[in-house]
Amino acid sequence: MSVLLRRARPADLAAIMRLERDTFADDAWPEDAMRRELGSEHGYYLVAVDGEAEADSAGDEPTDADGADSERADASGAVYAYAGLLAPRGSGQGDIQTIAVDPEHRGTGLGRVLMQALIAEARRRDAEHVFLEVRADNPVARGLYASLGFAELGVRPGYYRHGIDAVIMRLEVAPAVTRPAVAERTVAERTGAATESNDPTGEDLR
Image (cartoon, rainbow, N blue to C red; front, side, top):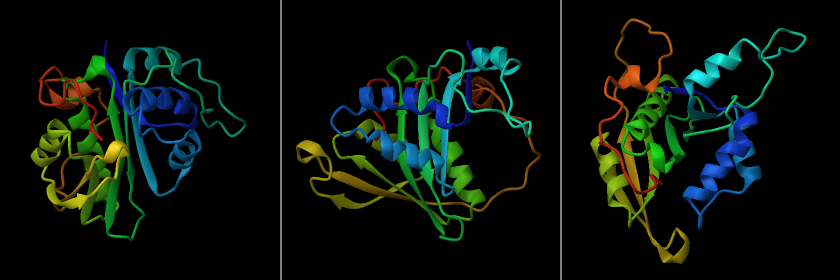
């Protein structure tokens, strides 16, 4: 089975919310808030889905009167991971809004690939800094973010439920490096080692 990253669609909302509620039982976003995020012109949301199922169903996907693909979920309805960036063009900064990977796909490098994709999009939108907040009691996620270049700036006391602090982190976005364009690839092709255990194996990433 291959895992494909693609832009999230409104039709992915139900699958995203299932993973959101399973991962963040105490701090899950309301569905209306997630719907607004997916539709925002300032946002950039990705989902990881079954690449083979996506390819098999692509030929049967209906189109509207203008020939554009209609919105629908992938054939399996499964979202293995998702992540979102808020980065209004011209603002000079971006914020990692959320990221989650289902338990069966943790430890595969998927969280890292999602983060790298969001950082790349922030760079395309001319962001100089990217911010995020992470639970103070999640050292594995904090380690992942640090390995990507995020530095800890401070703490928001009691930001999460049950009085858990949020650690504020910031990345200084490096300038873009010109390279040949490549076609969209599966996670395994993008990383070259999709089974490396360099992401959290038993914890969420928020």
